[in-house]
Image (cartoon, rainbow, N blue to C red; front, side, top):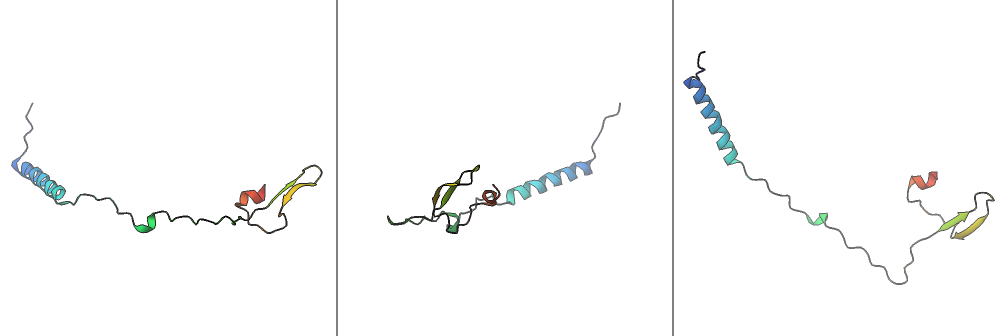
Length: 88
């Protein structure tokens, strides 16, 4: 069997590649974490006074008879929280 010899030009090419990669790695700046901006923080919630009453409405209807069992501000317009609630 013959021995595999690497020529001098291959060694020089390999040494040049290693030197290039070493210089490139040494010259890179380390990664730094992003600094949070002021808008990333939570804004303080509004504190309501003792006389604040959020809008509220409800209605309970018997499915079989159709009679209204309970209602609070049932005729006042309200926006549903989701489309799913409109469908059900």
